[in-house]
Image (cartoon, rainbow, N blue to C red; front, top):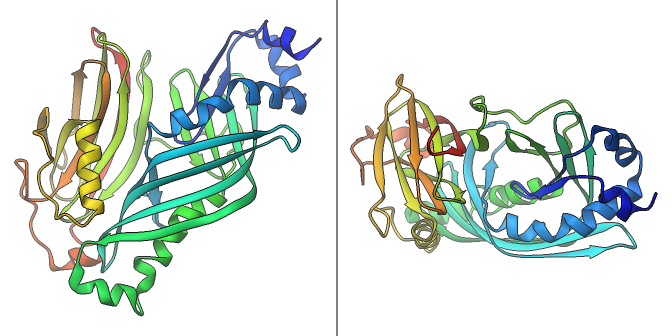
Length: 351
């Protein structure tokens, strides 16, 4: 049976999460022949998945972590992307550039830009209840170019560029290049897409802070450390139709924080100002709402919204909102941190 005739029998849907997602959902009898044929899997991915890489990458941010701490401590926001398919080597070269914010000891909030070009061998496996998509690094075409654009605490900037230079350049470069070089796994299931660094094998799943609700699609679920006088921009999240809503669940350990909702355009303008060294202040436009998240009291909220792209922002500062986190002199080394566990799902507004 030829590849085109086989594909005609598969009811397929393609998606990409954090970097890429692909799924073929249909007759269970097709899983075995697809899983057994590397050439067929490449044909399917190169023809139906590759063109979704960049569009999906550009509408998501990527969490950044500093080992051995598993919690998120920064975000990378892709801004340009190009994907080139090489049928001869059965690889895809992903070239992208973007900007990000990451918290580091001593230097505080560090803004950076990065550009890289990585050649990946893409593959997938159709399990019974999910599809596992792997990006395995084949070759670094262009080494990640990492450049610091702003350091929050300028009085410590000179120290950060001297003996402690790793907190700004080396550490940041390792965060970004390390994640690129290690490859990634996307798990696509009925309840949403999950992303993990490295090669995750079935039936393992990336960890989530909360389990999802039946009938909803999980957009993001993780644990993030929001340090003193900082914010974290979660998302962006896409609401596709007027009958949809975001369902959010938040818990905080440590000081109380504020949660706000803003459109993506406002969030992008805000973070770009921070990337140029603008001091933290309220967003360029007033948020749609702002709610406190108090330790020991879970925040569970349904947010019916017009179609569009949105950021949820966790604010751990006294510069906006109703909470007033206490100052700690140990904030420069990670004291007074708010650890926020959260889940964001997409569902019907009327449920």
